[in-house]
Image 1: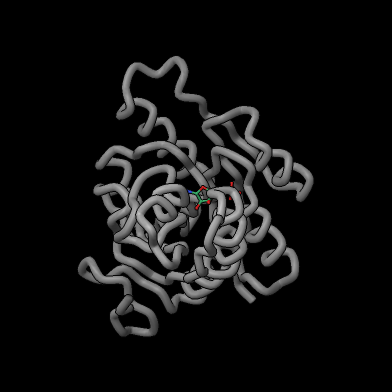
Image 2: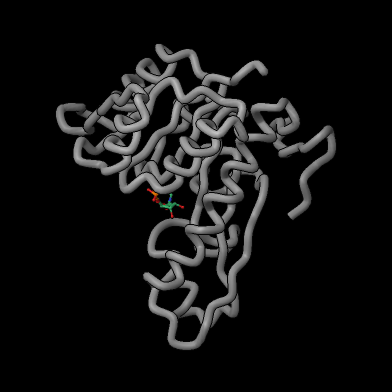
Length: 208
Ligand code: GAR
C-alpha cells in the first residue's frame, strides 16, 4: 500500500501524536510521519517521536521578529519534508493567514470542543461553566479564522455533575485519538477533500 507522507506539529504532551504513531505502526493508518515539529523544545511529544524513530525538529518563536517571519520559516521547514498532509496535534500557536492559505486543503487540526462552541482555549472549563450537558472534539480543515474551518468529524461525551475540567479533558482526549486517526485515514485514502470551502467525504459534503 502507498503511504502518504505527513508532518505532525505539536506543542505539548503528544497523546494525539502517539495515537497516530501507533496507528501507522500497526499498519492501520497508511501514512509515513516524515517529521514531528514542535515550537517548544521540551514538548514531551518529541520524546514519543524519538522513541518511535521519527525525525524531530524544533522551531522556537524566540529570535523571530514577527509572527509572519516565524511562519515563513515554519512553512519552509515543513515543505522541506514534502508532506501531503500537515496535522496540527495540539500545536498551540495562532497561524498567520499566508501560512494557512499556503497549506489550505492539506492541513487539519483537532480542537477539544464541539465547534462552533468554545473556540480558543480552556474549552473544558468553559463547557462546564456554561452548564453544557455534553462536550467533545472536532477535526476540521484549517482556515485563517481560528477554529472556524470546515468540520470533518466530531465526537461527543457526556459532562457529569461535579466533573473537573481535567476529568472532562481526559474523557474528550480518548475520543480525540479515535476521530483524528479516522480523519487522517480518510485523507490518506483520498476520500476526504476540501472542495470550494466544503469538507467532502467520498464526494459528498460533510454535514455536522
Ligand atoms: C488536545 O486536547 C487538542 O485537542 C488540543 O490540545 C491538546 C493536545 O493534547 N488542541 C488545541 O487546543 C488546539 N487549539 P496532546 O498533546 O496530548 O495531543
